Image (spheres, rainbow, N blue to C red):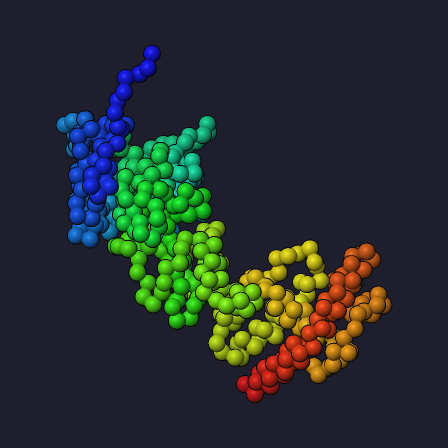
Length: 433
């Protein structure tokens, strides 16, 4: 026998906002303000009322269940419940307040988070035993729904910031995360509102392009994305601000992943730049240390990308032989510069030439002086280095590949001569400075 039809579980208003969810006993209505933020959610057993600033920042939440009313105030990180301070954040942890006989008692509580900012463990120091005490332990499915492992420690606490570090609203079994611009249902992996930046994300209700293991959505408007400097052509990763859609002056929006950067780089440049160069990145902007983000810029990057001829010359002088040495191993296709950037085909040849120049009698050596090395010549070349300690088979292997590099680069006479000239100019400049 078929079960009786129950109709639609969900209903939406003209703006695409969820107004009914029978699975959560929201059968009357959800009302919204001009920013499409919920102001009142009516359940069969109670209601939740939200109060915001004009820009949409949540200031107060009032939960009514039967005859009980609980008011939570959000005041710049300080959170109160029924006018009693619960906690406030610091740079390393949060300070928990425990009233004892009318006196506030404060304790440090530290959160252990994963690469997405999910709070996995909360712990503090027991003042009586001086031992660490676990207050809460959390495990998540990829889209944020919590699950319990057999040995999990759950003592219960008022701190409800969990998945992505966002507040879990579990009152009246609502079970939504407040991301700021929207509320997120981890059971469905969907939002209850349309993305305010849907014209850019092309996803109305989906979470993080269905890639929650690598991406985060700091505000509920769009995953943190890549932008390109319109003047320099360099790329930068920016987080969305909490007070509205991100607009980066002088930059164009690129996309959410490095694939978008690669596609833009290839589409924006000619054949030679596409094949003999790599995307460059700016050294400013709020960065997320997630898997898809380029590495944070280091001191080596400041030299590699510098417009100062001295800094750039010093870097190239060391970097090119470093690249050339890697060409000895044909099985390692992931050639890298000193700063970790990838190596283009043209840079591979330049590196091979620079590496060979280290062993030439003088910087002005002619191509004819660079010849394939015999076993004896190779042994003399690597004498005193770690290569000389390798077994004969490995040394023969390296010798053969070095000769392959020599044969390939000897056909690039003009490139070698140009490299010599550049090296001489840089050396002269360094001596003068």
